[in-house]
Length: 141
Image (cartoon, rainbow, N blue to C red; front, side, top):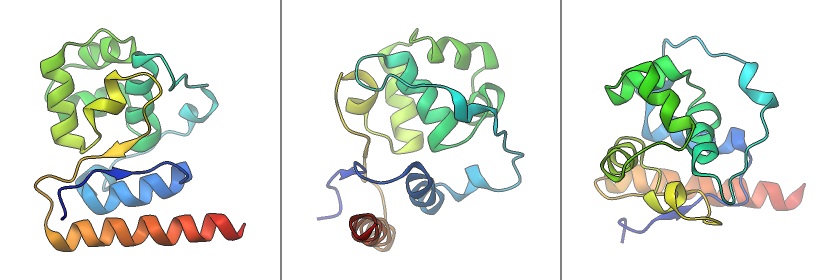
């Protein structure tokens, strides 16, 4: 049951970050965040580079250097990823480390989706519960 992908469509970016904090708390502790990312317009429909940049900047609020360190690559490599210059094995590695689906990264018009393989049942249930509560809250507004 808890190997099903979780679609994050309809959630605000702050809500997506809250869910990611449950899954990857190590990425949200002791890291100085930058607010300069917020003005960029992301083309999530058909630009893989923008989707990669979106994952790094919006979902995790990380600089190229910080994301590169987490992914065990150089800042320049993370920069190339932001430009859409990335091969399949690196996309797989990013998906496995971040739980963001490969489909979101490589397919045009695909919603932001979490992969849940390897999650404990408790973590999966916490993620699903938060998604449901956030969607209910968003419908009331």
